[in-house]
Image (cartoon, rainbow, N blue to C red; front, side, top):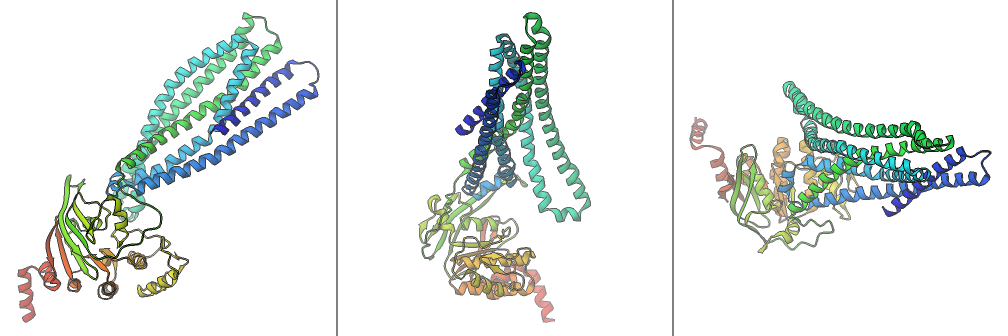
Length: 551
């Protein structure tokens, strides 16, 4: 920034020197001397070189700064617990990472031209003062008056920019609904109409109205400054000759210098709008950064994971977790939960929708820290300092899983060969190829995408596997393969497997079936077959079914 400022000031000084030289040549009689020609060339070359240096220097700096800003935001996002990120919301994070950083970068790229124009204005004012102190005093008075009124106008414009930036968060939220809910919108004309007319149209109209209101204030401020400038030129042309005796050459010098300064003045005033948007964006990023720092509760290093200790026992002792449910406007309390998991064990977690199964899964995997109680791994308590190390014991495929296009973080020497074997086992080898850890495609059906997610979990080869409604999108044939072949194979490899499921016909395959209801464990049965029957078929219906069977 220092080198950019110095280069920009030198460029502005060269420009001011050019103004003085133009006036000198216009006021002189005869042909300009060779020294003047070379001085003009030197000043012109100096202006171009210093301005280019300022722009190149700041272009590098601004791009480095925007990249660093994005990296810092991503690191802060990674350090925030999952529950807190869900409360902040994805649209707010996306706007900060895209639009806000872009506004700041554009403003930084405009600093050289702003500084050059400012230096030209200062140099030009100094030259006018050398020509006539009275003109300089008059210009200073006009500048003070113009600055006060200009500030009042753009201050209101900044307020509208801030309101527009708030509206942009809602607009991004609607855009996300558009991309994620496009199928539902296409299938329902009335819903599509309300979504467009109320959500999209109202948000875009409000965003447009606020931005136009801000730009109107900036335009008024810009034109106000031009009005003062033209007034000053009129005073120089018509009033100054009456106050003192001026030669035509001197009057020409005043007018040329004043007109020459109008371009830099327009540039300075035009930069204020860009800087105003950047100021609002920077404030939003700062607020988001502070919010992320306040909520930061996860140590999420990005280096290589430390070697895991052998997995012997995982215990949940009186664990609770609560969160606010906006739709019901109440707090959901999970627990207290006490469970134990051991290697080579297949456990089914069942219960109705909203019973807390997925929440419990995130607590078990360390994504949600318990509010009360304790999680113990091999007898050692899991706390903030070792929670990320604890999470490295899990491979999970959640219901809202994300599928990466390459096998990130997996560095086995025979990674491609292992992946091909699993692709064949998962009946995907005819659709997906893998080369250098990159999947040829992820554009598959939801069930096939879940199989690819299972492929990644297999390759991670961790001691604890968690599947959240994994089989719900599979065809009957592969659902049978999952329960009767894949899960027993994992158990045979001494893996602990926790499966969230509603497929009661396979409950007999589990070592234990844990039923959850309204956040509480209501049944934990090792007798899976008996539990399955009692869970799914009411007693009266079972007797009626037996009578039909006997008949």
